[in-house]
Length: 146
Image (tube, rainbow, N blue to C red; front, side, top):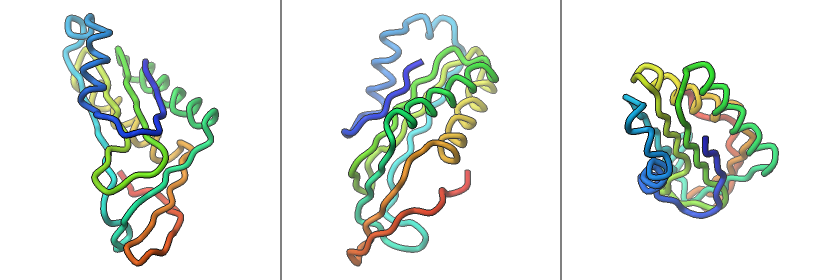
């Protein structure tokens, strides 16, 4: 399991490639891999968004992401999880989160990936501040439903 919080832009597909190169057994033992890549939108709640700052409390956030990934591994019998989440300043189109899971079968991979994303969106301690096109700023009160 690899769970990381990063402050810089990352390439989700390169992250997956590197992870798989460190774990060649996945290709032999896992019949399924699913991946979710979350990207910053240029709109939210009907407003144009120019930029966003994603803040977190490092130790608390890291621990919670690890708990989420571990729980999904156990429940869905996942072989591996790669979770990379970005923090800091970002622009529309920037990748924010990658969740990739490997499992013996597709059902476990799909369900495990979705469960990780939904738990992350609803329970991980991140705070989003958006900068709107008119120059005003606001804290995002709630996440979009899955």
